Image (cartoon, rainbow, N blue to C red; front, side, top):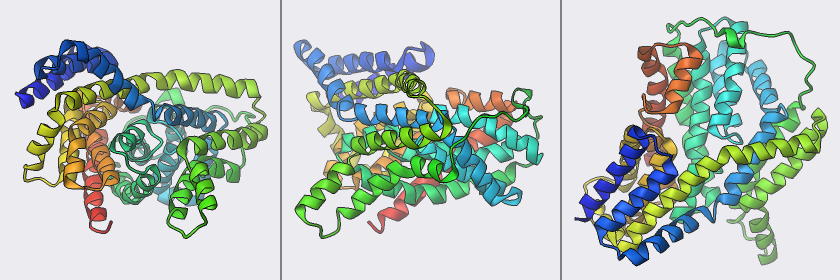
Length: 436
């Protein structure tokens, strides 16, 4: 009965999101209500369970996600992302252009959330296409692979951050493992895969034809790289320092400075001082950008909150323990199982964030039962949530329309790139699991 109840709840979620086009937050809450009724939770306890699930899920991460969105907006609006891209393209040169684009996507993707990064980087891709006279797909796929990997694997992006909190693991360690897994995955799904796409010819979009040079002031190269990478350096540095024999007072200070919320707040302040001053951005202009970033991130926060409602219903009913026992008995390694659950939900729903959060709710009790490394489970689920992007994924259509591709060529390029990211992401997670 428990398996049937969970299956019905997920089926309701799929139908509401895919067929009815219900906002994911509402779909999650309705699915949680359906699961509660099927699992026999007393009606008087259902509203409280849903409220607790939403609060427990969103409470610990809302500051990180909102500050992360604000920081990414500052990097974009100041021109630091443009400066990073131009510098890397100039450094690598045209013969190694796919490598330059992959590196750009990965570095820019760390501070920028995926949708913002996609919209921001597409004009850059086509400006490079016009200059280098290379196929747009060949140039664009490595950069978009970098954005996708950062989105699926690295905090402070919403889904990895939510999973870190849900699994009770260390965000700095997850970030370090994400870099270890993400870089070789990017090399394969980005520059190497792009070599097979040179025959996909599309005319460059007239929308992004080069315009006469403007006098827009960009920040310096060092300031752009330093500000964009500051959160990674601080979080990873604090995690590494935690293993050193430091005095208790020093350890407490390092832990405080390395807290993700403090790191992002410091990064915003440093960015405002360094990037704002260098480009002449007024404080009022930066505050407008921060307000827009908060509006943009609100729907993602609601998706995360809704996933918490469904998770709490499973806990209150005791279904999580039954689910853990059943899943643990399957002849599948836990990391592969987490990846597979996310993959199936991703194919059904299209949303990587919803797939990751839903799979996390199902696999969470297995972590405690099996003792699997929770940081690696975050990455395995992240890899699964990026698999097999197709017609129910908004990213699929954005790529198709921006690049003027047929459905066949979109599957051949975009969908296969996302599948390579998910597949090799899991492979490198399993390899890393042998050593940690």
